[in-house]
Length: 119
Image 1: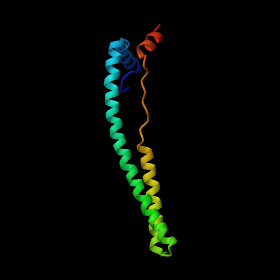
Image 2: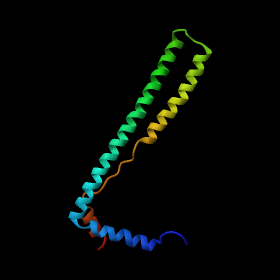
Image 3: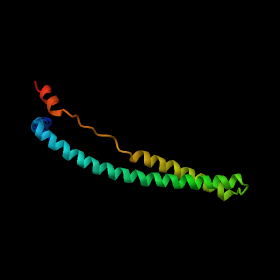
Image 4: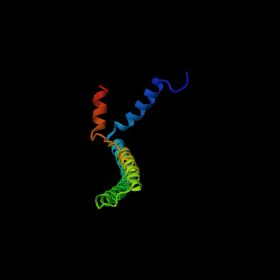
């Protein structure tokens, strides 16, 4: 069978966790992890800002076309544009929602939790 055996993986993972059971090692790991997490969150924030900007632009175009219809400038091409914009706006909103990252948290007292679980 291809791949890593579960026993080998479990041993390897637990071996790494033993190091994190030390308060100093976990503190260093946590600081590095949180620094990297902040960088990733900034990248996601920038990406979400771009998605939000695209949604706002589509909403503005849609509002302008609806105003044209209300003002009596109704024509078949405007209706076609409205339908296309509605599809684009729905897709842009879905893309923005999909781009939102899921939160990742670390416990403050992982070494104590680990030591308690090993007893």
